[in-house]
Length: 286
Image (cartoon, rainbow, N blue to C red):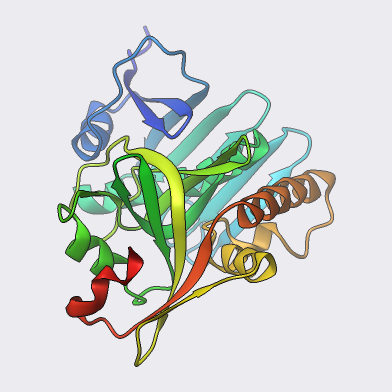
């Protein structure tokens, strides 16, 4: 007799995913981080999570590759004890995670594997990209702040949330989609410093800011080429997927990804925002 699988349905942007596991503690851990999505909508992505007692991977082994025979993208990390695959045609993920005592580390392992393969999934179905960014929403308008670690994404999110009508979407990872020549921003379950419960807030992007540390406060409108370049630097998708690839499928990923970046950068108001992190001047975004 097979064990019954526990499950939780979540929604990230336009994608509904059903996460299943025979380990009820794993589902409880995910549920604590994400409240779940109660709907009759059919899940278009199935994610099966398995906890493995013994790690057979080499500590320094890390690899992302495409298996043409299985039509699957796979990710292996020996240091984390992760062996995961996304089967593109079946729209199914299989995450094998080393079982650890720390709930925080176990959740982190799940999010690392899920986030990486989720990016490939949304590009494969041509629905969007993940951006290393924080996001705020005011009414139906989204303001997105992207930049390297320490550039001020969390600072801006923390100081503007719940002020002047702003609501915090996310402080680490924003899903961008492109529909009818408009770019939309969605919250995700991948959060950073802010201990917030992920939400389904979303809106049409009014402005996207690429942050840069400076001694002054200055906002400069970027050209389409400058915007596209910043998109390339701040996308979550690992660079290994976009260069040094020869297989048809990897070239297909690259082409779809670059098409999305080109359309978004052409139809989104993008700025370079130089900041000196003075709270008195944080209203520069409005």
